[in-house]
Image 1 (cartoon, helix red, strand yellow):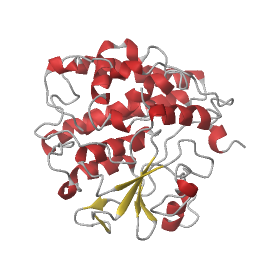
Image 2 (cartoon, helix red, strand yellow):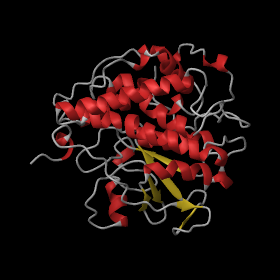
Image 3 (cartoon, helix red, strand yellow):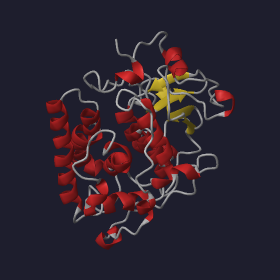
Image 4 (tube, helix red, strand yellow):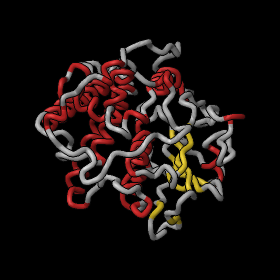
Amino acid sequence: MVDGNSAYGKKQFKRSRSQFADRVTADGRDGWTVEEGRYRLVVSRACPWASRAMISRRLLGLEDALSLAIADPVQDDRSWRFTLDPGGRDPVLGIRFLEEAYDARETGYPGGVSVPAVVDVPSGRLVTNDFQQITLDLATEWAALHREGAPELYPERLRDEIDDVMRVVYEDVNNGVYRAGFATGQSEYEQACNDVFRRLEWLSERLAGRRYLLGDTITEADIRLFTTLVRFDPVYHGHFKCNRWKLAEDPVLWAYARDLYQTPGFGDTVDFDHIKRHYYQVHTGLNPTGIVPLGPDLAGWLSPHGREELGGRPFGDGTPPGPVPAGEEVPAAGQP
């Protein structure tokens, strides 16, 4: 029987549904009311789904309202660990494994332990691991706690189009790279890989004449695409065999990704060291040696992108986020 990290690439991949889909809302209709300081966002800088939440939190200025716990990028078969913190415990929740918050919610929960996760600090219970909904709620339900000048990441007038774009990007790109990487047969792999690059070509055409996916300003759709693009050459091209071409070989997508990386709130949450160590050391079914590649050269992420020639206002009528809070800076090892 193949279990845990060694199972990757040896059994058919199917992304699990978020088991705990309670929502933290302004009116508390699910029993969880938006409240400054009550909740803790648990993330891994390695995980693209968690990275969405980190970027949204930064752009919206929710750092003081929603505290952040960063897990070790190399988790074991039990769950994400807080080994980056003194004593190996999260200083706010007092736990060693994220699994403990899941267990406080449902004793003996048999499913996977995933990030991002929102945990209720007073009770230590998991509230939600619904990665698709968490960022939408941060943009809407948490509005009363947004910073002055926070951008509209999910504007009502564009929601139908944003949802349509996010749906196909999720199916073919965000989740598509995993379907390719964890495929157990040639035809399964080829179908997934072809889907990835067909959609990337579509995105390249869409972005050739507009600065962002929905036009002149950043939206939730850009956040969701960015977290896959920023991982593409470091891990998905090689580790997941999505290697028809590199992101850096598509002039439009490479410039778009650099534009976002250099935008406050995006690149200042990205830790390339965490990303590479997680994928290459955790997925032992795909990479049994655990060797982490030295490349690619990351210096290009800081090179001029030229996308400002397309115009646009990244934050709409808003302003850039402030400096990264003390203690949340990406270590030098994870930066270009």
